[in-house]
Length: 348
Ligand SMILES: NC(=O)c1ccc[n+]([C@@H]2O[C@H](COP(=O)([O-])OP(=O)(O)OC[C@H]3O[C@@H](n4cnc5c(N)ncnc54)[C@H](O)[C@@H]3O)[C@@H](O)[C@H]2O)c1
Image 1 (cartoon, rainbow, N blue to C red):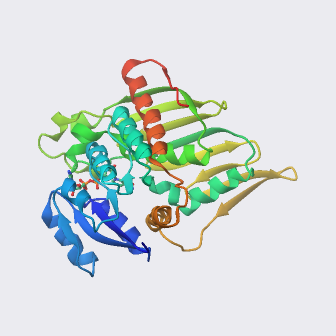
Image 2 (cartoon, rainbow, N blue to C red; image 1 turned 180 degrees about the vertical axis):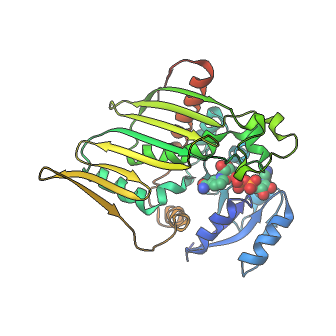
């Protein structure tokens, strides 16, 4: 095989992923799958200049021998059923974040994926941003010394995704939606230390009152009454190397929009985005702003890595197992919020 024929499941974020594959010469999107056929037709008509197959049933899609690999970009609660079906059919699978809508579902998928031996990857796009990769490499090279603390905060002033009832009523709230990006990116740059304990708070202060929806739009009729998830979550994760990660995420709040990750190292610190690196040289503070030349988009970078794992046997940098450990941390923040207890984690 010298080109991977990819199927995209889910015509929301799947469109960004398809654009990523379009930038990879050794990949071609040859099939789309969505329960709403018009979404596939509209996307293909405007964005694809070659014929593709349409599927409304992912089980049928996964059986197609002319498809080599599958991207799962459906609402959270459908990630695991679709990825399991792909694996049963021995298709490499790339699953959008968060891995699942619960920890048991994530664990079931990782067990099946690892037993099958097929390429399995979590699509955490923030890992593929130039700034994140740059810092991760510097830390791996020892330029930051020991990383002993991190802080990640993602805040939307008024950004509850009111069009997506799956999030609001089933698949997960703000932490599984956007907190997961900051959590994963910070943990990955820190060198993925083993989490040992978590304390958190979480709740819904805006959504159930019909407030805080995207750009101050009114909530769809009936939506506020269905609101069953967190619209804020905040936690502290302790790792076995003694490092800590403070994480906060808000779909809405009376605060300015903010997206920041800070790492504290014994030799350097950093803050992004934009990427700033803070050091002390010759007894004086030296602050550097790092800008990046235009290169592949994070989606193209991610698509390219998935393809090289399949075609070149390159070890996967982001196996589903990473998504499962992130899921364990984020579910522990939510569980701690619900129970008022510290949650102890035990991964080997
Ligand atoms: N930057 C990112 O990484 C990023 C951004 C947005 C969303 N997401 C993730 O992408 C996923 C989807 O979110 P979205 O915003 O695209 O939602 P969306 O509602 O816009 O799109 C989801 C699509 O999946 C389709 N779908 C639902 N069930 C299906 C099934 N059983 N088979 C086939 N298609 C099905 C829907 O019809 C819809 O077209 C979520 O897990 C979300 O967390 C990731």
